[in-house]
Amino acid sequence: MAEPLLPVPLLPVPLLSVRGLTVRYGSVTALHGIDLDVDAGELVALVGPNGAGKSSTLAAVSGLVRPAAGTVTVAGEVVSGLAPERVVRHGVALVPEGRNIFTALTVAENLALGATIRRDAAGVAADLDRQLDRFPILRDRYGQQAGLLSGGEQQQLAIARALMSRPRLLLLDEPSLGLAPRLVDLVFETVAQLRREGLTIVLVEQNATRAVELADRTSVLRTGRIVRSGTADELGGGAAMAAEYLGEAGVTP
Amino acid sequence: MTTLVQALVNALNLGGLYALYALGVAMVFGILRLVNFAHSSLIMAGGYTLVFTASLPLVVRLALTVAVCVALAMVLELVAFRGVRSAAPETMLVTSFAVSMLLSSLAESLFGALPRSTDVDPVFRESWTFGQIYLPKINAVTVVVVVVLIGGLGLFLTRTPAGLRMRAAAEDFATARLLGVAANRVISLAFAISGVLAAAAAVLLLGANGSVTPTFGFNAVLFGLIAAVVGGLSSLRGAVAGGFVLGAASQLLQEALPVGLAPFRDALLFAAVFCLLVVRPQGLIRSGQGVRV
Ligand SMILES: Nc1ncnc2c1ncn2[C@@H]1O[C@H](COP(=O)(O)OP(=O)(O)OP(=O)(O)O)[C@@H](O)[C@H]1O
Ligand SMILES: [Mg+2]
Image 1 (cartoon, each protein chain N blue to C red):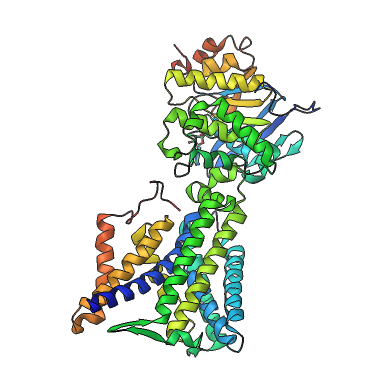
Image 2: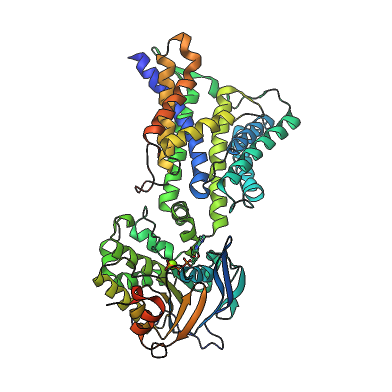
């Protein structure tokens, strides 16, 4: 578990580079040309109030929505405009808001689908073991229908499923949403652990204080624009930043 | 007793056919949320293939029928449906209507409006008699074909990686794509499977009727769609269950109705379907209970 998921290559360019990204839904413009760079091995938090465009950013990066303008490159290769099933082959995995577990399938089948893009059966088996060690509850529930899992268990399954593709970039959309405090802790510990393993992560969080303090850097989105970026210190500390930019809702008491 | 057994035999036969039609419709609906009226065109194409290959050995004719239905299904997906896939559901529905009308007029201009007949196999006209019970051999063939196809499809969906990808795509297409499931391939495969089901329907229908017209398959798809809706449109198990329920109900009405009312059989049947859907709009089997696909 200590070994990195992927040897992080020394890249002359950021692992993720977003330029002028614009997303429109009909007449609604959700993102107004944002720029964002994430270096290999970095954990970047993306925070902002409801409707700021956080999910839209992740959707555009992962190919779920086609940007109206702008480019997304992953390790120097342009992925904007590609279908999601092609973007995942560039090493991008998204854990969507609301988890999107296949409730009619078993835990085992959900995990197997996470490895859709892989051809190395032995490597897949080893990774499966690794993820079941990481989330022991999934081992207990392995043969069960995923729809019967609790919210926290589904979140663990969603993260494990995303990791089964061996991503180099993991996009997490509000992984702690709706979870009991104990499970919120588990999610944040998991994110910290994945970061230590060398994975590059973009973390979208409602729980801004904790996200900002965990992240190397944070970008604050508001009505489709990035209004501030920096480390927790540069932003004046997690709680202060959350209070300033998100109002009371973003502050963990 | 004998009339009961006879009714059961007939109900099983009709139910199997309806299940076959319903599965063809539900297969594509499950993935694409498209009610594919053009499924009737596939059955029609299969029928004409059997007519024009009458001089060949049966095995070759069957293979050609399957090949034509599968190829046409995949071509229709590529040419007619791929472009409108992201459009509103009504657009796809209208497209599927247009395609079935277009192909039926094309068949009429090429092959004429009159029925073209062929003998699929002499066996199809023979029957067994056990005392009072009359069992046409085609009924046995129908039941066997339906059971083998449903069983094979079930095994494919539950035991193979491609089947798993199809079930995932049927539950949540966007998430399946995020994980790397190729949309075009899954949709193409769903159409190909519906092509195999249409080929089987063409053989069994033609074996029973002996002739094909440009509108061959319209009724089949109508009943298949109703059966699928009765069963719960997005569940394959529902489609099969709906097929058998509709077939059995139809047969029951046939037996029970006084002669004077017989012409109203379908009207009564559809009235019953209407009442069922008022009570259970989701159909007999609801999806999201772990039974979807
Ligand atoms: N599919 C869609 N169709 C139309 N408008 C959309 C769609 N998805 C998002 N929007 C709009 O785009 C804007 C940004 O939404 P987005 O979901 O990206 O925000 P968010 O920051 O993730 O918010 P939240 O914290 O509520 O998840 C909002 O105004 C939202 O209403
Ligand atoms: Mg969101």
